[in-house]
Image (cartoon, rainbow, N blue to C red; front, side):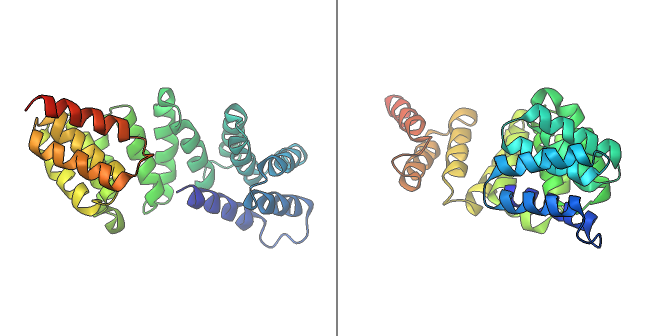
Length: 249
């Protein structure tokens, strides 16, 4: 998803400058994008900041500033740049999406994130990444609107059958205490992602903690350990849960 984000934002910058000729902002933006593509984010950030100072009224410059500042670990500066881009061009999808994405990283700012992302969504209603972020923000805030955003995602064929989507749907139902519906979507998640360790582990947790289905939980924890590898983040957890379930026999 990150590759998509940067491709969209840089494409937006390129569109802005298309047809402008060899202007100074175009050259500066191009250099920054090339450096970012090579992973030289600090150099790209320096150029973006310099360009922002010279051309403070160009929204695309501030979008790039937001991206480079974020990648350099300066979230406050990234937010300031994204807000400036929105002020200059509130009708820019890239500006609203960038601001919403940055707000989305802070659960305390979920309301602001949702507002910006909804504006971006209205501009591009088929954009899958906006739908995903809206859903993530709502889930993080335990918002009742989560189900509606999941419904938007369900309209995307490429996601509707995916393990991640069905896992997300299941988690939403767990939070609402509807274990019957949650089980339906966890089964779909497992069927689509039986070789994805995190999906298998999450389904195991559900059968263990919510349904109390010891037999199924044990099978799933063992399956997770089989496919996850010895250095998996959830290895210690899965082994501890298996040991606990063994004592309950």
